[in-house]
Figure 1 (cartoon, rainbow, N blue to C red):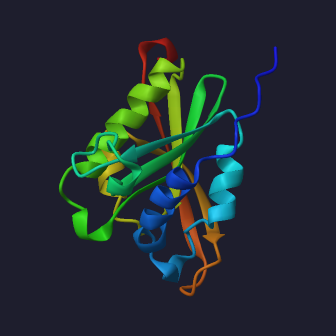
Figure 2: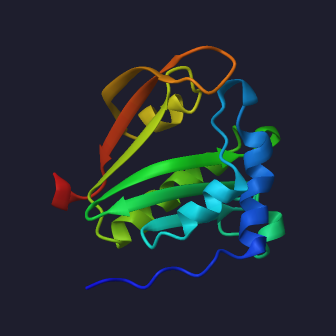
Length: 165
């Protein structure tokens, strides 16, 4: 059974994501995606996006977006591709609510295990570890696009339902 392709993402959705993307990732590391990359990713039926307002919940208006999460699901596993909150609003619990929403949405799709990959010096590692993510892999010198030289990537995983235990 094949699923129908998604329609082109709305300009409002793309604008909301890009508003955070443009300031949410330090250019020294080259991690930010372009509008085209986001649009292409969202065209895949297995890609999912959550927006967050200042409470971490879905904004009433896309213009009120201060954070987002983008993920890709394959069978019973899901990869958190990107998660970001506007820098001036970090450490207020928005990322925690967004991560919780991501996990709940993944569980509702039948996912039993989630993965993410990040550069070794990413401050978000504290959030992931606090939420039960465990390092399961290391890619030496994986990130090379930034201005800071090669940086190792850490792969984390978490079982999110008893079906995967």
